Image: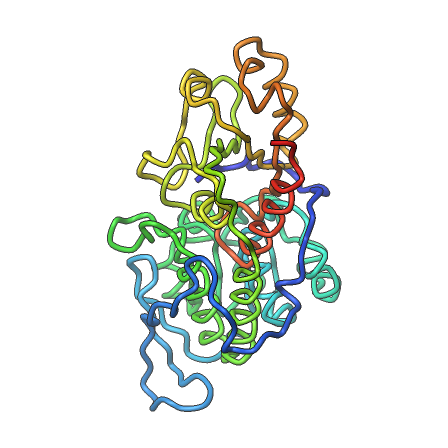
Length: 348
């Protein structure tokens, strides 16, 4: 997946947000794209099944067996996706340190973030060092990417486990063929919400959040015009784009856009401008990041004589999505609604 420069500091990212994170819907709501029953959890526990989570809880997570002895009370989150997951579940008070945030939280989580000092004032704008992490005495480190937990970073998973610190990585970011979602679906995203709810003994909150997101997703009318799109994440000389099995593909499928890079079997991929020009997509989805904004991408596309000839560029057919909503997490459903609304507003 695309990695922002480690020194980039988040700033405001414009977006249109919906209320999927704050709506409490009935569990029996309608079904939307990829909104079937969530996959079964890979968790097991020593206690009998019943109300609430039984501990110790063991899970298979990105080819690592991790055990949580009790509901985590002191958590370090790395990446926006993990921080926003806990905020959306009402668990912001458990965060003792947040790091490597990709942008501001959405409006629907702004109040929750303001009430969480560790989110309002992040530990680091990049992957924190193990000394800084351990100094917070966490019982869990929740990372958005496997690469957030190296020995020379926050600490490798085996070492942290020996020190009594459990680790959990967003399952959508697992990289091995055995554990990586292929392709990623909304069921996978909802399954992570369920699993995090189980880890924190917050299954009721997780059920409510999943129900609300399923309901919102079901409300989206998928565009049926067969429009093609390029998901442009980053890069100048070589564009980095959404490929065929990750969050961009999942979101575009739900919106009703045909990804011109869908035949690349990866979550993200390096493309070429020659390929993009030949594909001549109807629209271009621009990932809006503080270190590589949508405006900068538009300037690059329109100033280059070759890309300026693309239909989407000539006609100004741009859709934008904030970087934090482009990675698997609680903002993906809002991204579908937002992009659908933008698409409906284009002159096509």
